[in-house]
Length: 381
Image (tube, rainbow, N blue to C red):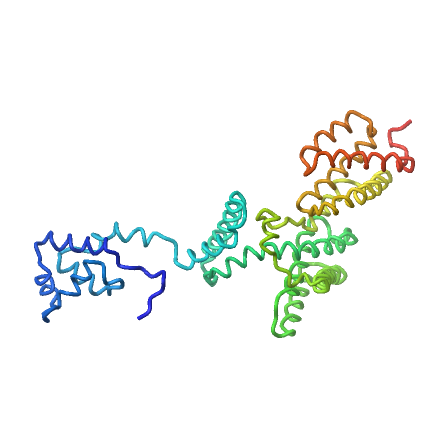
């Protein structure tokens, strides 16, 4: 009979414990075999091999009869069995090893962070299943599935980057039809559309049926035909863009995981972007300031692209900083102490402080050229 490599092996330590239990009763191997009703000549030989740990996979019947003949029980072996029985299931151990192998080329700190995230995800999955005992429990993940889950976090972020942008663009004109309190529900339906479009279906009719169910559910939630059509169009456009660019088949390389320091890029949701728009009400001056910021971002982006600095690796912080500098220039000027203080505050935090100060000069030059087109300040006399 073949045994798995991870199967429990009867160790010499357990054999020595059995021998100790036998000698405590002053029993020879022959007498023990007789008490076990093993009357044939040489029937004590397997018992001797058992005590020596040479029988790797003895039957439970043999051990139970041995203990019974010695007047002992399984509790006398518990301290030796506990190190094995207290370990996680074999499949989980294999999954841990596979995930560790995937991440072994990362720096130690990133390895720990990624393993912590993977462990938390696994625990949440198990807690969710335990909280709903009436539902069918999910299958135990294999090591391949757990490795894919780590990779999938990067794939999902890559896809969502395109989808959330399309959804944000679709939601902006729907401000009157979809109030702020219903945005999350509307975006949820759009994400269901996108999930169905990116999922594999053997039969295209099943996909169409799934889309129809989401359409029906969205209308039952009180969304108009126009809103539902816009949400579905956003998901379709994002799927088409991913398919056209080949990103549907993209998988992160080991280098990509290391480049992102083990963390999947964070993608802002569409509703979050809409809320950010509301926080900064757009007036005439804000529109012009936004245009100046857009020009400044475009100019600063060119050398950043030559440096091959990724958006989530630092370029986003330059964009945030430029959007912060332009209002300061508008309120106080590019030669003001406030401007200089902001430059000194941000420059050390960015990837290249010297380039950051050069970028501040670029932004100041652009602002000084464009400020003549700004409307008068509201408080100007």
